[in-house]
Amino acid sequence: MLHVLYLVHDVSDPAVRRRIIMLKAGGAQVTLAGFRRIASPVADVEGLRPIDLGATRDGRFAQRLAAVTKAAVSIGSKLGSMPRPDLIIARNLEMLALARRARSAFQATVPIVYECLDIHRLVLRDDFLGKAMRGAERYLARDVMLLVTSSPAFIANYFKPFGQIAAPVELLENKYFEPAAVALDDRMVADDPVAPPWRIGWFGALRCRRSLELLAEFSRRLDGRFEIILRGRPALSEFPDFHGFVEAEPWLSFGGPYR
Image (cartoon, rainbow, N blue to C red; front, side):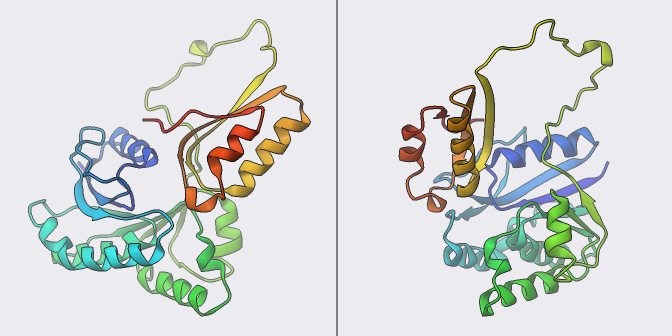
């Protein structure tokens, strides 16, 4: 059985849980380690007890950098009791740095997969900071065996033009994953079309201000024929007043975080 060490930026992120379900469905044994965005360590994620690397805060770049530096010193001892993995998956750039440190701690050549599902605005800047971050990414990813990303636009508009990574690319789009097989006969066929209002759900890490504005404008133009339901964890650092904005929109609603 393939043993995967999965290093993540936030073990409490529901998307991490979904990826673990996918890995297990593929037959992998998973060890989970990472940071958290909540006060207390997470006890269980899909039957796994995460190895806690400490707390970080959303939108606090300097604090996250300090946390990664601290974790780089201690990660060898924190992973010392686990058997050597066959593969390390690093979710996001900061975890790629820790993946290299972890590989050194195992004193073995363990292949690394870089999972980059979002392009941070800082790496797109043309100033010293942006160039430094792109340079750091190129250096850290110089010998990864695979890049996993979620959008062809990320490949066409970032990774290829900037020459970030030479590794093969696996496109894994953000789509619903059902581990059980679904037969054609099991599909539900609606005899009658559903009447409005139709509901659009935006679930997950809510951090795009422009997307929220577009959804609000869309619902107003359609005069309530569509309702927008938001659930998940809004990045409040990205919105001037997320809750006030949603409350002021007649066809938007926020249902809170989900599990």
